[in-house]
Length: 345
Image (cartoon, rainbow, N blue to C red; front, side):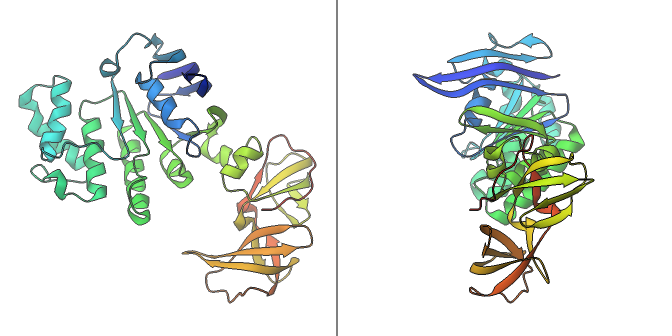
């Protein structure tokens, strides 16, 4: 493993911001620290960089203990939410600063800067003033500056949260492509699930300073460790059910869900787990919200009040009687599975 974190704990007086964190990141891997605001994500990142003085536990790189290594000698590159570019320098000047700090010969600056700008899709921007850049362009420059000294670990702290939704989505795709092409080892902090799942190979879900679950993106999404993780990952209804031969049954119907062990299971239903259908469980619509890709419904059934979705073209109104059917794409299996009553929103 490239990065190994063991028992990392951060105290602010009597308050414990991060408790006994354990993480591993392999060479070329991207790990996302995912959790709600205040869960300790940024504090954990800062502790790994050496920016938090009140730390217990260990941080190692390729087996070397970094406890006594100052921040500027750890070989980590940092990108923050606001980019923290120097407004009095042009784009090339911002990138050259990172090169000078790491004692890259001046004769190599121009070629390195051109290469970096091409890497982040900003060829020819060398003399552009940073005050003239869009939000997305500024974050690309911040990313290029962090990559300038060729860090062994790139650390991104909510790098896209200040951008509008459309730009954030496109830049996430572009950054994911860049990380995979360059095989950069990276640690990402975000509260945005789509951002984490776009960029990362694995995720660690934090809550109140503790890592509740860590694993491959697809596994954490489909098999949350407990109800807290499931709720954070978009589950709005919990239902007890049974599984047999790849088929799960619960109060809301049955559907095929391969890979689930036979027996009692605890199912987490995201809104898209219940879809408008010709037949299924009956319910009355109490709320309708139009989204970009679907219509979000709140439906009162005999079992619970649940979230559901309908096609964006569906003509559904408050008060309508509708039928809902299960869609396996919206179903998660929570923890070890145990019998529970249906509980909605």
